[in-house]
Length: 493
Image 1 (cartoon, rainbow, N blue to C red):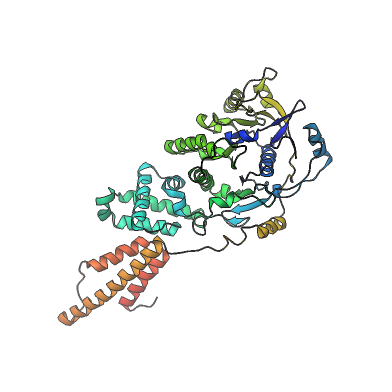
Image 2: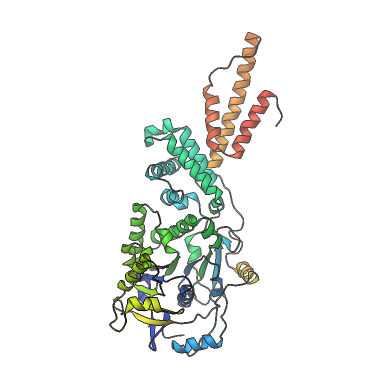
């Protein structure tokens, strides 16, 4: 095994590596497109895996899957390995589990609506502060009644029911504005149009699924295939990563100052986490990043520019790898200056100038030493990975998915009784009662008057039936209503 298990590369023939016990002090991999960030990410992820640390990596471009297969020991790879002090580079892949929200290139990754919670769900739906407060109320009502919120049809039925019952509920939960109900319903329709309905449901993924090691003690690399997800719904993508970060923080116990991390999570396209996020959520992310290292979790942000991250978050990233940046615009020039200023100065380097001169496969690197102090920035040649530089072919990916220990566990959706089914049953019962009452009243009036009755106001049972049916708001609910009207008018559906 290499003397430096988290070797990044070499500077002037000296190894540059992350100290394992400092790896949970987080990190940054930055640089312009095409400067080598993906290879650096692959190298680090596999090094953590070899160290026995499970890893989560989103794959936005679809080119990261090669980490599961041994690389090719070409002359070029041998030369780079020798330059960074790797006299013997054993080519091997990492144990890998593939995930995909759409279930196309990995195990289906689902969460329940309750798992995501009202705060992240409000962000996902772009709700304002008032609407977010109402979403909190919907969750509270569901909890008080013991109605599970598992998928989007549960949430849609629950929101509709709360809107119909707003006068009665307002006494205990506060004012419920019809306009906010309508805004949430429209946001739900928009979410469904983006394909998010497949993201919610059961069986839902658990945190333990991501914390696995193989029989050799290597950490499993969990790859989220996010090429389609990032393109079609970047907000769902970023919200999923925030959920995982939150779960790690909430569920994992404190471990103190461990010899190595328990788990490492990479945030590719990290700027999406903070784009248009309300201040309350940004503050929460900053707090979690600051405190989660005591849980043994390392968080590594991958983005183009340090300016993409809030300063309080940037200040907590102890291990930094900066690939080349280009200074074509005033904002680019600010990004270069910011990147240079975040490093501990090295009198031998003009850091700001070097950032713009770096070639592909090299970077400016500063890591934390054994005492937790940042080392002076150094111009570093990045080591080659032991795994394949390039994606797997489809047949290789399918084979790994079929051999996965999670094979079949998430393939078949489950739809157990939850809020939607409960409200559906109430609608059926209420509509059945309404049918009987309406038929009885109609027959009685016909006998008394000898003619069709005049239209009167709805009875309590009929009104309740209509309200509950409207609250369901789904195709099945509409079919129930059409069936009832068809039987009353004698028309066939």
